[in-house]
Image (cartoon, rainbow, N blue to C red):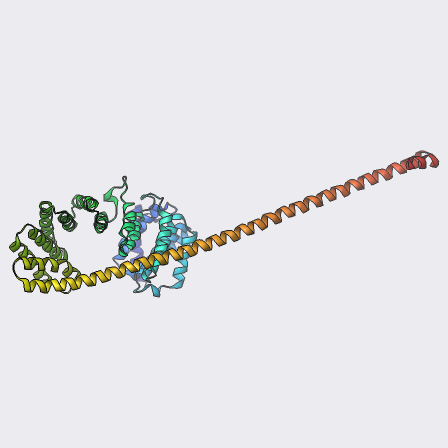
Length: 450
């Protein structure tokens, strides 16, 4: 146990050393940005050791930060630990209620950045338990916390925007997804500073493609391709070349598409990207068919089919849905009608299943939006009632205060009047006594009566 603790402590110290030249206290009482970047770096180190060691590592770090009295750092560490504990579960149903209570408390009482992290983690929890309305509600609460912060002030902003947009993308609400994706790509953002920027641009381009806005789709595919080349990421360069080629093919720009498909095939082979290679070969075959190069087109489709078998992907219906329609067309154009109909029947069957699945997802998305709207309406009603009750309570308190002040004013005036009457009566008695002592009694009595 001691040895294990020593290893973890050494690991934590090494991470600190990279950030603070060997002085762990360098991140204490610093701003959220500094501490967030440190913890993100630490996460990468601990992830290589597995979930259990990562959790233990953050527990030890949390104790250290608590002793040092940096409460904001403690909160940030707690959320990282709780995130690891959630990721390590097969189902969110197994999540400890105490852990959930800590997250809820931080979502209410932490700094704006900590609250955003806490709401985001609640969103992840509810998504994992398939409570989609509550998940999106908490993602939106997080969004409201970080939306006005800069990307430098809140390093998680681009990732969280894509997580939120990705949930709408999942439910095929591409228009809403696009809205959040676009927030990442402001004029002042440097694409090289966006985490997984190539993938993010590719997703945005796909979103426009689903919306049949091909010019915008091509624009963002080109941006993604430029970034991939800039970062010397050949695997992504190949994938995006194929996606861009498909977009050009939809516009019947076969010359531009041909070069991109050939690049896609070249780089997919080089990096052993099996799925991408199969799909790109089939897409290239479809392009050749449009150029009336029927025999060459069939060669490409048969290559794709052979690779499906070789790579053990013959039962992958998503790949079949991309390859079989192209294969059926190529077979038909080469006079192999019986075989063409066989693959076409399979393709139609797969298409029906795909459409069914997409419709179910779409319906689930609509239902999710309805549930979310109902839930938010209930929250707004509850907030309105609470506000009304607060106004009534405040009215009663103000009225009671005014009444109390009025009573105190009356009592004060009454006291002052009583005191004044006492002084007047006392002076009157003194005057009467003086008259009796100085003047004859008959005259004094006459003056008193007058």
